[in-house]
Length: 189
Image 1 (cartoon, rainbow, N blue to C red):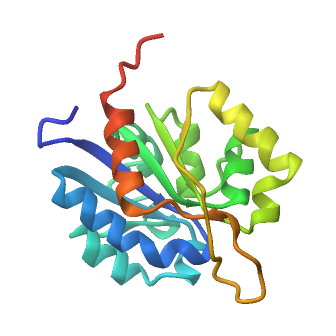
Image 2 (cartoon, rainbow, N blue to C red):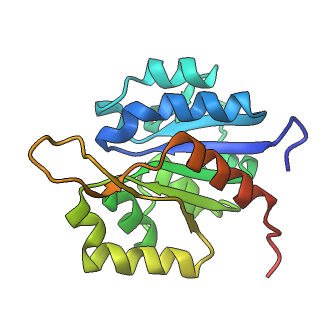
Image 3 (tube, helix red, strand yellow):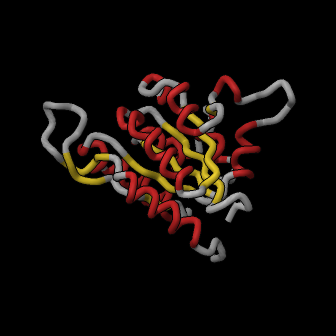
């Protein structure tokens, strides 16, 4: 684990409505002693302001706009090496699929592809999307690579016309417990 406390966690925010819950997750991680960085996809920033994530993290947010810095630092490599755990939250069906097929054309997917040590996915999506054969196949692929999942949970969804189902972002306590468990796990095969 990290020298500064409980460990180094990169919270990778993808573009789902549950992104509005992520500042609370970031605050909880920091309160628990984790060193936290936040990266957000362009789609995530349509749901949650970058400034809100920055305030929760206490530092700037890594985005596609900061990906290549004038200093020559390549953020996806730097972040993949820095993070002891990448927490993808909310993890959309799209983000899961992109990782399962090895796409890396945004900062978040490139960071995962660049060899993130451990990846924990916190899915949040429509129940039908979660239950689709494509998502099941992609989740199975990621699990076979050693990636972990927390949730999704059953409950009311953001869309009022939908019946409750499994697809809701896991609660803050469940995510925090899964982060602790993932970081405590010995990475040796």
